[in-house]
Length: 190
Image 1 (cartoon, rainbow, N blue to C red):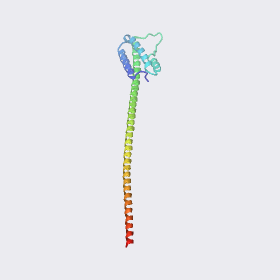
Image 2: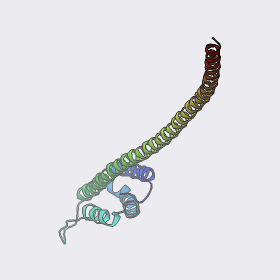
Image 3: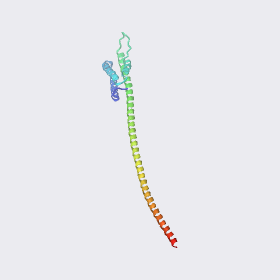
Image 4: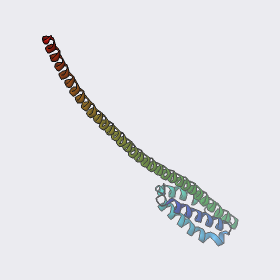
């Protein structure tokens, strides 16, 4: 895992790779000092760019700085050139591996950010759904209250009708009593 921004680290690795390619075009005599300076910068980069930098640095040093020589035997110019090129190629191999690792990490970060964004969108949609549900519930409650009001009005009207019917019944009952009284008076008279 990188300790520094992945994009910055990738740019740095790309820069190192270009420098390695330039040094590979040079002879041992022309590029040895620049190679040492580049090697030092790469080591510092490894140390600060990755969380496991110290481990990576040990691997890098053991591979790039390994040297097998025979005591008392002087290397020829050709051997020095081959050693110079071999070390640069090992440096490039490590840099390419770091580049791959950083690109994977960048993809992982992009996926995590995308996932975070999707979660945020889902949360917004959930809140909107809850809001709409509350609106629908309020409309349902409003419709229920309106229906209850209509029923109340109907009951009031029915009560009024019942009162009117009761008044009519009472009136009819009085008329029937009056008619019965009249009928009973008529029968007494006849």
